[in-house]
Length: 98
Length: 335
Image 1 (tube, each protein chain N blue to C red):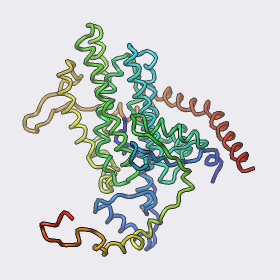
Image 2: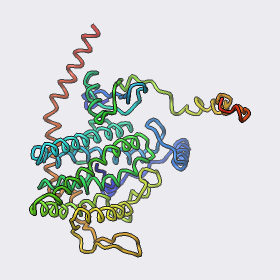
Image 3: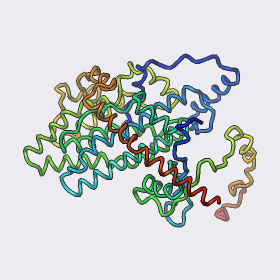
Image 4: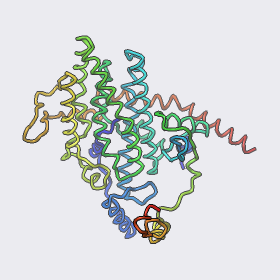
């Protein structure tokens, strides 16, 4: 880390709830000096056209993520468990809406 | 708005030859190419070839710089917009450009280059931005023509980028494109108002603005494909989806029709419908002008860059104070 990086405002991830009843969805990131400023800038940058009714911000360095290198090992085991889906089960036509 | 076909930088000296690669890297590269071929999207933390990363940082940051510098020619007219309605529209549009710049900087940063490094590249003149912003905005009609032609050209460039193989860039572009279409429509409507309800002097003003912006707008698509050294690689990697010449032709075909309903003419005597090609033919573009402006010698290059550097330098104490304030509060909470 050099001096220029240290003088940068930290990075925040922005999550916006589109309308009440829906979940917050990640929509991008921005730099801000503190939490209050992050919320305010998120409003200006990501909800200029009434895209939001609620905003979450979280410091990017606080997010823990799965390792993309282990994607296959992590997620592929679910591939052969088709019996977890309703379409796996064949029912008589008259009852197929069950 | 405002990407210009970004492979123009090929003239800046080219990339250094690749160093010898390990067997592991070569395997990773094969896997990467296979993902690209399968139409897969690449995310920030995925393995990618160094040249892919570099190309994207260059293209996305140039695009971001263009949005930010692009605020200057239009900001010039906010205080002089003819009505309150037009002023509110122009303000909203310039605010959008700021937002687009921020989406794009954030996308570029996912590739491991900091915001300050990106700014430094712009301020020191190492990074480029779309050369269209090095032309002056002389009259109010320029605001309309920028919306109609410059944003129109930008949209044509940008829509294919929504399918770019680098996902953070593609996502930013989806957002940009969604917001952009009002820019083009408001410009056309402003011109239409002057052409249908304005005075003779206002109609002449519109025609004059079209005359000045037409050729620079065509240059926004970048040099012919044959002269774009990076185009082919970018196409193969799915960074670029449609060639410069095809996009330019599409733009000409669309705008020539729009000009008719507006009642203006384009400053090109060679413009005519070609029945055989099923496209509009147009005259030869003066690429020496393009390279001159890209190279730093356009009408407003020094002014634009000067304004950006001044804004950055003048804002330094604000950035430092905000950070100092945040640290003070953090300490208080910790105590």
